[in-house]
Each structure stands twice: as C-alpha cells, then as structure tokens.
Length: 281
Ligand code: CAA
Image 1 (cartoon, rainbow, N blue to C red):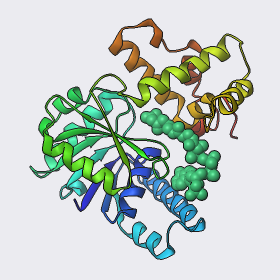
Image 2 (cartoon, rainbow, N blue to C red):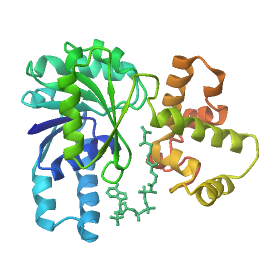
Image 3 (cartoon, rainbow, N blue to C red):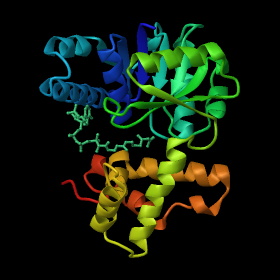
C-alpha cells in the first residue's frame, strides 16, 4: 500500500492521517469543509510536534510526514488510493451516503475500511459495490498513542482484504485484535456499558463527577476516569454506541442513561464543545 484516503477530519481521521503519514504513506484527507481540514492539519502538526519535543520523532521526519498529507473536499481526489478509511461521524445514514458518493471514484482494486466503533460491518459493506473488499478497521483515540486496532470482517470480507489491512495496522506499529461482527465489537461492548454505568452512578447521586473519576482512576488504575473519558470520546459518540448496543442486542442492560441523553440534547458533547461532565471553557 502506498496511498491511503481518509474520509472525515475529526479527532479520529486526523489521528489516522498522522500515523499513516509517519509510516511513510501518502495520505489524502477529505471532509466537507476547508476549515475543518485546516484545523485537522493543525492538530496533526501539534501532535507531531509533541512527539518531536519528547524526542520520539526527528524534526525532519515530522516535516516529511506533513508533506505527505494533502487535503480536499472532493472524493475524486481519492481515485488513486489503495485503501480508503472512512472515519466520519458515528451515524449509519451518514456513512452510507459517503460510500454511495465515494465508490464511483475508486479503482476496482481499491479497498474500503470503516473506522466505525459499533455499526455492523456486514450492513455497511452491503451499501458499497465491493463487500468482499470492505472491512472494519477500528482505531482507538488518541490514535498516535493507543496501541490497538480492532479488525472486523463482515460476512463477505475476503481473506486477502483482511490480510492487507492487518499488514497495514502492523506497519503503523499497532497490535491487532480480531472481533466478530457484533454490535460495538469488543472494546466498546465492554467500555461503553462501563461509561454508561458511571453516568447512572452520577444520575442516581451515588457520587459526584470527581468522586466517580477518582474512584476509578485510583481504585481500578484506569488512566482516565469514566466521565473524563466520556468527555474525551464525545458524549454524542458514547450515546450513538449505546443505541447500537441497545437496538442490536435487545437487552435492557444497554439502556442509555437518561442523563447522557439530556447532555447530548443540550449540546454538551464533552471536550469538543468545551462542556460535558467537566467545563473546558
Ligand atoms: N497525539 C500524539 N501524542 C499524544 C496525544 C495525541 N493526541 N495525546 C497524548 N499524547 C502522548 C504524549 O505526548 C505522551 O507521550 P510520551 O509518553 O511519549 O511522552 C503520552 O501520550 C502521554 O501523554 P500525557 O503525558 O500528555 O498525558 P497522559 O499521561 O495523561 O496520557 C492519554 C494521555 C494517553 C490520553 C491517557 O490519559 C489515556 O490513555 N487515556 C485513556 C484513553 C483511552 O481509553 N482511549 C480509548 C478511548 S475508546 C476509543 O477510542 C474507542 C471508541 O471507539 C470510542
């Protein structure tokens, strides 16, 4: 693989662009608006700068990585990519529409991966013209730091497709964990109910935001408390994943906490809106 397309220039898309560029791949990042793309490139530059400051990357390598990233708002720019990774918002309709617009521009050999954190790979694959060349490639946030990539085959994913993205994940320095195509796969099947339970713990007055996070950081050795982590992931994404679990597994244990719903309705989505369980203003 030489050229990777990334659709979506949010935290996940920019992180994926970052690690691919550092690994020597050419990256074409596409999003709807130029200002979103320039913010994403600035974020990549800042995060590469952190690695340089900590002696993990040479300045020349940072400049070379930045030089490998190009951006645009037109899917036609992805026409010569070997693999396109979709990292748009966690909404099935949005993703389906992206695939519909994307595939006419791709070469017949190109692979398509989705960074969905919960939605059925089989269903998304069926919305493309190449279900055999479609796969789930789920990165963790922050992408440059987290070691894991979850790989998920849809029912039609070909073995060669799976092998190609496994090889790529390893080239990016990641460790692969393979999950079957069930709602929210492995990491979020376990992580999100824990976060949702932390919100219930707050909702029921069992503890304050600070006590809940301190309890889990110091009592269970988690690097971030569950509410801090929810703000980091984005409360809208957390809620979307809980809905996929609740709808897909039909079990009341996945019922989204009403307080989580209310925060999302208020537009309190966590760090990205400067307000969630914590205030970042
Ligand atoms: N890009 C590049 N490097 C970054 C970074 C970023 N965005 N954020 C942090 N870093 C680097 C720092 O430079 C530092 O590097 P060194 O160790 O090489 O010096 C290292 O990460 C630690 O950073 P800090 O010292 O600034 O901060 P920290 O020790 O508090 O760690 C953290 C920050 C790595 C984010 C840590 O708090 C953590 O691991 N949190 C949990 C994250 C997590 O659970 N992610 C999964 C979310 S779930 C998910 O992603 C799935 C989904 O679909 C929802």
